[in-house]
Image (tube, rainbow, N blue to C red; front, side, top):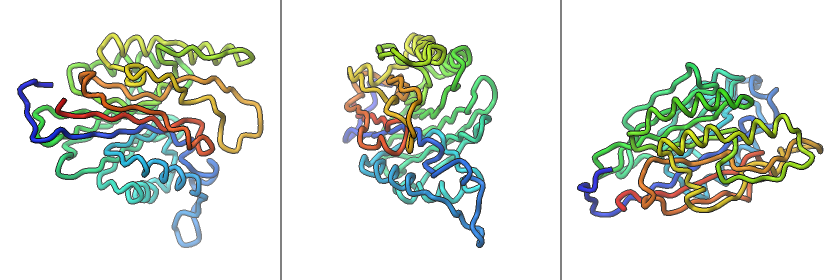
Length: 284
């Protein structure tokens, strides 16, 4: 970020990252079913509640994990864009069980999209979306990365983090479900599956990203609120309730640009992940 850049007025950029849990749909079996007239015949009531939650935050950029919309992805992408009032959208394919990544941007006078790339090769299990956005009055673009780290392999997650660091000299906002703990996590583990817990609490990826200058906004803001651990929609008991902060916003922008952060607690019935948001004031 150049100190010589000037703005008539600072630009506020609000971003959110949210793992929908199975696309926000009633169940995975719905994802490849159609009605008699070829239109989606889905129970999208949970998705619509999630969209209501997202809409209240008036985001400029949203990254969604588990956009598992199957054959209905084009229709549901349009639905989400319309409900959020965002004119630009992109769904990047996942190599792993259709857990696609969806990105939405509220374009306008202060924010435009210049380019999008989506990586699907190794080491990325779910891919990586890189949306290049331009903030009015700012010389350098901002790269919004949307990711979803490997679900069960600390080794692969470390490789993903190492590969992400190739962007360290760019101005980056990274929206991701890391599937692993943050450096400041210290959850209760009594009674939980020790095998799964040990894998989730491996902080090697977080260490890698921190060392490369990708600041964890939640840690900067000193907010330890877990983003998972409250259960799964329609859960019938049991399950692993490790409470930790795997959903994060990270950035290479100066700390002074970070002017807000939070974890949304009002959507716990609609996903096993919580919506995480951050605010950046570009021009500070």
